[in-house]
Amino acid sequence: MAFIRVFKTPKHNKFDYNPMYWSPEKEDLQERLESVEKSKTGDPEAIKARIGRGLRHRTAGISSETRGFRTRQVQKSNRTLVIVLVALMVGALLLLFYLAPIIQEATETTI
Image (tube, rainbow, N blue to C red; front, side):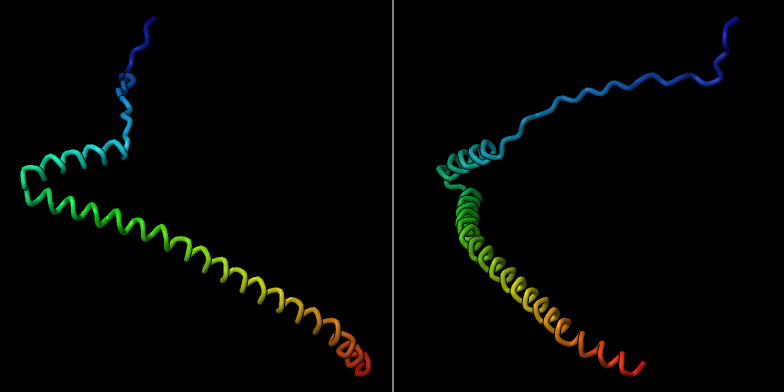
């Protein structure tokens, strides 16, 4: 006895994916080589691209120098925060130890 199928079962889909390797250094090198070839012909767009790339590299160097400054500022801020928190905790403990007996005596005498 054969089963009658009301719905046809779907077949699996084949997925054909070939991963590609991308190297930003290689892409940058190819871009620079192409711009050098174009600049030899005197193309004004190539000259603009070369100048823009030079400015990008120069500003990247500056940002790496300022990164150390930012790190020092963050460390200084964190150090200040820890000192303030410790001072507040010590102050709270001193108030607790010195004022607790006074408060306890005041509540006992009124009861």
